[in-house]
Amino acid sequence: MNEKKQDVIRETDAEAIRLAKTLLRSARFGSLAVLEPQTGAPLVSRVGVATDIDGTPLILVSMLSAHTGALLADPRCSLLLGEPAKGDPLAHPRVTLVCQATRLERGSNEHARAERRYLNRNPKAKLYAGLGDFSIFRLELQRASLNGGFGKAYLLDRSNLLAGGPVAEELATSEQPAIDHMNTDHLDAIALYARHFARAAGDGWTVSGFDIDGMDLVSGDNVCRVFFPRPLTAARELRPFLVEMANAGRAAAIAPRPNRTGSESNA
Image (cartoon, rainbow, N blue to C red; front, top):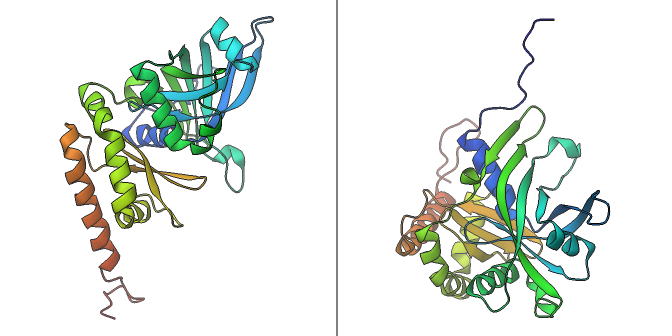
């Protein structure tokens, strides 16, 4: 009876932070929980998701939607990210973000950047993003709960997940030209990033976003996250990092593989 109750929350480590960042940066949609103004009851909806350059979640929602009215009445909300694959859905990682929603003013620099990043991730939204009844909200992160699978529970704060500051702001000004350049002239390098660093299958990968921690790649409805070897300390480091990673991917692709006896094959 006097035995201390076992703490189910693990100590937050680099592996947990990397997993949570991967779930956040690679999400295309999530479950948004708000408080219904009339009753105070929880209301959950599915929404399209992207991230701002610092990692803050972005949603594009219609003013006609119940969850939009709820956010305007009470900005407290949470966002569940992480989709199940094969097998037990509870065995797959997911992260719940506790947030405060902020509506971005159309015509502001902040709105323009958020819209650009959202549409890079969700290009089909171009059909309605410009309509007057649609708004972009930043979901300002307060804290997070990560479930990495059975027995892998962690609590994180905003400093664990967000990567902002002057370097991120500097990168934001040159991000779109860098994306356009890579997607026009260096699709072979992007394919290497996807295969070598993200172990992603398939073809047709393009860059949808850069940030100081890494890059997001898309191929149709598939998304993968690629981390840089280390965070950028200046925006000018982006090109050397991309060259370094492409060279590493090429070297790995031509390296001899061990044969069945464990020695290197010269075939």
